[in-house]
Length: 260
Image (tube, rainbow, N blue to C red; front, side):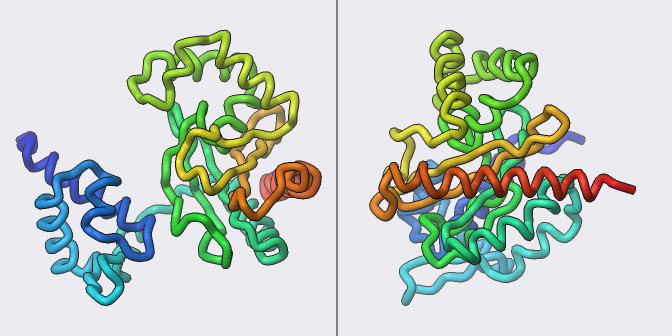
């Protein structure tokens, strides 16, 4: 017997709210309302349920809600990290330990990239609280652009065709194939991708490069920073080469792990 649509809708709203809550150390009802688009009354009701079930905590002294330790149980059965994520983990952690800025590793997931590993918990200066499992646009986000710009021509054409049929606002550029290809060509020419400057939050930026092995883009790696803290010339001169070297080291580790 199929589930009732209102039952599915309630579950979808609860999961949406829990995903958003996981991106903040503490989130008020207003923050959750604006981020999810759910009515405040719905947010209040669902948050009460999540607290009662042990997935969230309400701390009035902190000004809102935070995730509770029980959320860890939701990932107990997942063992699907690609080999590239395993290879990237020690390199990424070492990078953040040395340079402080957080890194993210993203893999292709249909018409977006999904963040599968992040060093945000190990960075004292991260602009974000958490990005794991976030889906990022192939055309507006640095991690996505790094994939789309450097993947094989045939794959790029297929992805652009799919994006052109998307109703997502961030995919709108795909409808203008000439402009989209010009943007991606510019990314390849400079050797790294950057987030669209109009994407929020504008107080931070990301530089990203592909992790390539066997002529294929396995994943992308990006470093996020505060724009007020780094001059662009210093960013390009110092950090872009470091992130490129990091990507090459990760690709080398992938090859080593593939060896019998």
